Image 1 (spheres, rainbow, N blue to C red):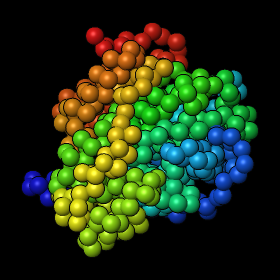
Image 2: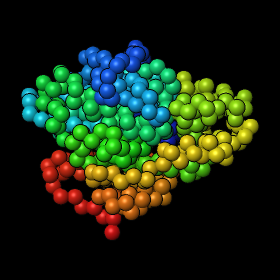
Image 3: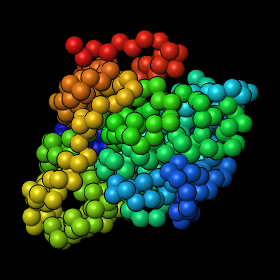
Image 4: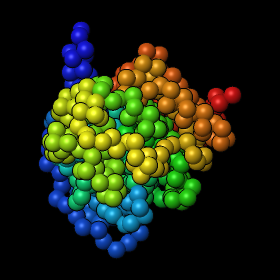
Length: 389
């Protein structure tokens, strides 16, 4: 298979495994007064892993209060799913962060759940089948007003923690056993790995009341500068442009526009209107120099902002299961190894798992069940088996 065929196959797999959606997003909601995690709106929705596939669950689309990367209050959308199993006691809650879906509102996970077009729902269904409730954030600006702050770690991590808070404050979910005493697990891969890594680091300072038992996170883009360097001119080149747009959405003073040439402006505008599979194909093998008049990643302000999203600078206060494919073509394996070393060096309880010959999408598929089993052990109060030594 030649390079371009491989890339097209990758894009197709990415759209399946990382949640391409085609449905319209819920109507935009304005922020309301209140605290992070407070619910602004809620309405009944449905959860279908495939079109028309029934599930023994109840689901609600919510908008909830959260916090931007700059510390300002904002409103984020998401979905809460609870199994219909008659359970009324405190049940575990997973706050789940999806991998890259795109920049357009139509790409939001909550937009695809009713139609069965968010295929990462198949991984989520494995969690509800265990009797766990699941809260899935759409992230800032994905399904709500404004642009999606893609790859901005602090905003993502806060949205993940606030999704858990919101789920615990949803009365309908409370009637089905989801309470403030529910044990919480944090789970995600790829962009979701970045978001959950940040949630793990922020838990103690941002949402200490959550009874977090552990974080399962994989394929983590822990160092955006290294990830951008690895993808410049390669299969994931479109993701570099998407990340630049996301950083600029959070920090408009970065002024991405002044660095783009006409081709770059066209691509960024296109990507903001579409979802990940199309965006990935559009950006295949582009070099930063192809779409810019000057590389913003060489500028001190851009470097500061990208370094601000770097993981590994704070010790997660709950155990972590960290996994990465050795052949990951999007997030270099060395980036995962570095994150493990950083967290271990800070004294975190880390169980590291390599997936031999695992590419990025393979890592998501192969790693999900061991990650969920690890969280099940945490909910059961079993001892951890950290392997930092």
